[in-house]
Length: 295
Image (cartoon, rainbow, N blue to C red):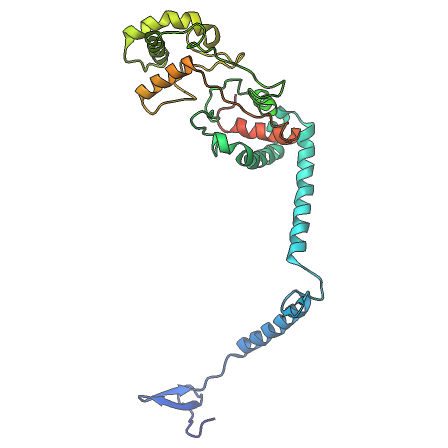
């Protein structure tokens, strides 16, 4: 204790002997509980250093007397997760799509797993959430080239579209600018009629001229009213939903004329040929069906 320390008459504590502008510093000891906790933490840290991996050594690091390692724990957690996942996948493998949807636990597992599989394999073309893009179908609406039921979606995922798999969905639009060509005027009139099916035509006279061309060349696949046909994968033309859609009406008409003259046809891979198993295809089908456009 400092030689000039004195006892404070109010608190009863001795001062340190330090004084600033008449203010004297009390020599107040730390609370006993705080000191006790402090010593406990020191003892705890020493025990932790001994039991678990801690300080580095010349040849590596102290591995701890328990032999525990975070990497080992991660591997254990992953194995446990795989085991739990395998149980659900086994049930999904043995269940129909309808039964999966009816079972709350299987449905939740399928939706969570399907989202992961979709983002890894499908989002690159269809977009995260299935919103589609130019040339890639929107999976959240009610328009389906090959049907939007659970079984339809499963078949499309399994075999794909216009690929080398013998069971893939196949369709081909004739090239009306080729062997039996349409003139530029006929193409323009036909495009106006197609636009009129979704109330977008700005030239009704031209649309009326395009009607007989549509009836002769297009209605066998697309339907008399442009309603489309899932049996042959012919898109509905009366919905205003376009796979190749221009930014404005003029560009949209140009896209229609281009598609009639030199048709574009997309390709979707067969996901079984890419190594995705049946159970995974099922959960992917359930997820796609849930996006909003499933029937």
